[in-house]
Amino acid sequence: MTRTSDTTLVMDRKYKVWISAALGISIFSGIWLWSRPSAKNIIFIVDTSGSMTESKLISEVKESVKRVVLEETSPGDHIHLFTFDSEIRDHLKLQIGNPIDTSVFLKRLSQITALGQWTDLVSALDRSLQETVQLLQASPGRKTKIILYTDGKNDPPSGKRRSPVKSFNDLLG
Image (cartoon, rainbow, N blue to C red):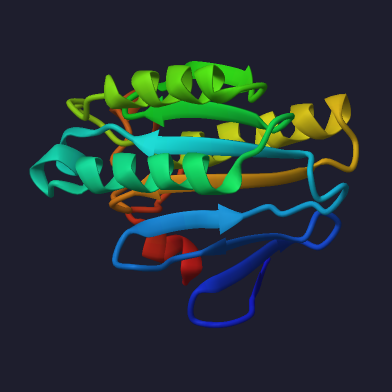
């Protein structure tokens, strides 16, 4: 891993993976793998721990996800929605074919609540990379973007504590 600036960490030169933090919310806005401009995968991973409700970030996150879906997706794109707190939940995977698909995604997004007791940030990052590898194997060369929305606190359940990382900023050094 190589630190390249205050907000960027290059993790894997083969896939040109990077993590950046912006806007006061830790956002994993990396893993762009270039191919046909019209075909892309977008993976949303949303922190649903209680601190996201306490800090009122969950409504901002939902608006941001909605904006990305409405402004950046087109027919043929695959979108995936995962949430995490003490565990990771796979809410929805679908290929955009028409406006009804977008509506289905946005309805599911609106139903998400942030009430979890723990925040297993490291497992969420692991899961996002696993999903990316599966997508690349299924559709080699397709552009893939992972967006992780979190307040940056890493507080996994005691049985899952694997790392001394306490916040997203610890990952950046």
